[in-house]
Image (cartoon, rainbow, N blue to C red; front, side):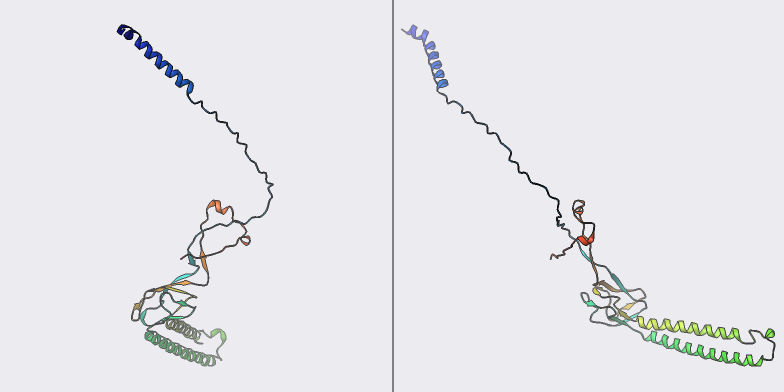
Length: 245
């Protein structure tokens, strides 16, 4: 009996495994077949019509004045007084007084120039009178023998030149007096102030800085792609500005 079991037991075990394997294979679930759906594209046909469209192009830039200037002096001196409008952030109009410089020396120069001119005019009148006397004295002398020096013509021309020189000096002295009063060159906004009462300024010294308020410019950078949407005729382009704080 034991010999039979030892001989046929492996065969029986193999047969059992074979039967179990066959049973599992026969009872395994069958894979479901997936139905492939065909995607049919949906097309919509639209008729294209040529028409004018407006495109919006956004850009950002800084507001800058068209006119701006450094306030400088054309004469030297000490600042005697400042106008209340000459302060950073204040708006001024053209020819508004901003500062006054000490003008005592310039008024003295003006008085001296006036006196020099009066003296030159007096000498010219005297020379004209001498010329008239010389002409009467030489009336009996032939014209060909009369000299310009004898008729005092060169002397009169010299005195006339002195009068012209004195007039130019007087005009310069008057301008220097006027330049002691610093005024705004145009309507604008004071952005910088470099002086105070008692400050000494030299010719060309900077007093401050002013921005013009009449016209402002904004440079708006535009990309090449956006530029193609801008009409080259400025009359067909509308610009809308807005500020951001």
